[in-house]
Image (cartoon, rainbow, N blue to C red; front, side, top):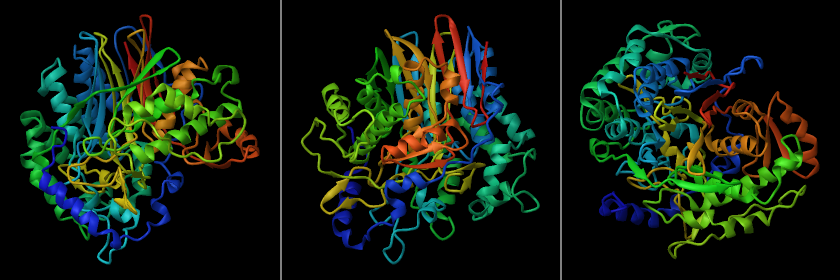
Length: 597
């Protein structure tokens, strides 16, 4: 059965939705898609010196991760004969400790795994789910008014059932090589003995001190003994996390969904100050990580593959590339404002479709084939005029596999606190994995030494517009739409590139533009990641501050675009397989490294 939630819950939910319309006010401007352009990402780590590129090459295995401790954890597993899935477990367990602002066991993620022996690409959905007791009034206050966005974030109401522990354990059981309990030594040692707080983590703790001080357990961990935000270089121990790791090591995922840690999570959510959530032990016990069919799209002789719904990543990236296929971006080049005019408007068209049609397809009909159909994308490309601004980027009318297509446009904001890593082992297996707790430090609620997600705020805060359903509206058991875009690219059936990035809904732009830089502009993967970011999702060009992107401000404005200069904090981590050489790169905007042998 496609729909795993109880029908009684679903029917009750939509009965409430049908009668609750009058209680909804027009959302504040902050909830509109346009406002997402104004949501600032995590602070940018000062880029490393231009002469200190973060690339590395090898012939045996390679790993690119957003934190040096996590990279070393994965490398140790690979050196000991582990495969990419084994390394994935060690990497993610470490990231949840040393990069808690971005991901962890209280969150979720999407995995692409290339099994080189069977020559099969797997995609695993570890996205969080909404509790069974949510209803259309979930994000309204006692007076029926929509909660302010960050009031909803820093609360128990924003917490979905974490999916990452089940994804890690379930995938390892199926594909891992090393014993499960052998993968915990590195993160356990760091949790017990301590690690030095990185500049990035310290900066974010200082900026988010108010939210981190809201809940007692979180404040005690992040504010330190003197009550002040953790400083760079502080030796930080996490005995609660160490105990959770020991339990996970011994009992597997059951301890997170049926045992001690499940009870800790539920207790923390239900007793959150002011705005408790509805998460129950039943919600935890019913969670499953789902293997879904990958979504692949052609581009200039390559096959670009990624996650399907509830991720919008592969569809949107594929749409952007497919819409650009008729244009000679290679001849135009990376410094030509016309290249970015075309890329920006193709992105706007993809985001228009994304906002209307893409959500959890266990609950709504998503026209996956129609959105990536060659003739449909040719029609979308016909809207683009070289050197001329697209005036209106409206949703198209893709062919549906089923009759219903009367959706309203989504109003969700997606925040950019996420991480990505790419691994290729000595047997040719590949992991491309993006994980998240959504906002920086998620809901700010801790349980078991880790932070809980705020992924429910990735749903639209409204369920309907007039008589039309919003596809990405909240419902019991539903998974919120995501932009996470773990990607593996194939040429003649062989994997040649793996990449992904954090960055909220701009993930889609970061990944698509890196692909264009490598395929169309013949850049190295490191140069592609270092290339200044220029994004346009809803009509405004965001130009990466303090980079050469600013030089395009005048010509883009001359075409009629509005522009803004802001920090665009990606976290691209990826690898290229070229003949017998493995080449990796890590985004200079974060703290990541590449290790290869």
